[in-house]
Image (cartoon, rainbow, N blue to C red; front, side, top):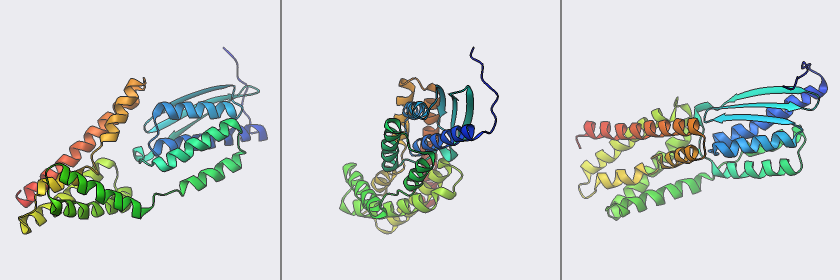
Length: 263
């Protein structure tokens, strides 16, 4: 076994500690944005070596990152990072983080510059107008695809606006995704059921099917299976359990709304 020297807070050690902290920031943002477990581990390992690490060990699951790096001179540092609430999918930010990590591996940025770039990436947001428009279009198409008429599609598109608004404004104050899905499906189910009672020409079941597509965890289940096949069994099982609970909360919300509205 290789011996490590005692770590004192010298300027050099502080620089190593700062580099490790910002590398973990990259991993946290990637995982929070929906990055693959093996991709996050590989990215952190490559960045650790790029910033002078002689031996880099990374352990990542969906809610936690642990990273240990041995730097020149026998300095060995370990940091951990908790990922709150499992994260949210944001492929725009994830793509930018992948590009930043590749740049750092080719030509490492100074720690201060790396932190500045991360601050810029944190401000990246999808245009709300595009999000609302895409949600309306997808729910309307799904409503028609599953047997609804044009009026069902229009109503489904209207409720898609409510779902998007809740995702942007309400999701952050909910303790977890399961509670949010239960609340969102209950509100949407009650609204659709009420409109179905008032306007008999509508088909509430087709409208619900269209709107549920915005909430169903299809990508989460796919990622869980992918993680298991990639050898990340723990992360895959965690994602799978989370997705199943998510789907159960959606079903419970719509069932409760149907029971209350009498449908």
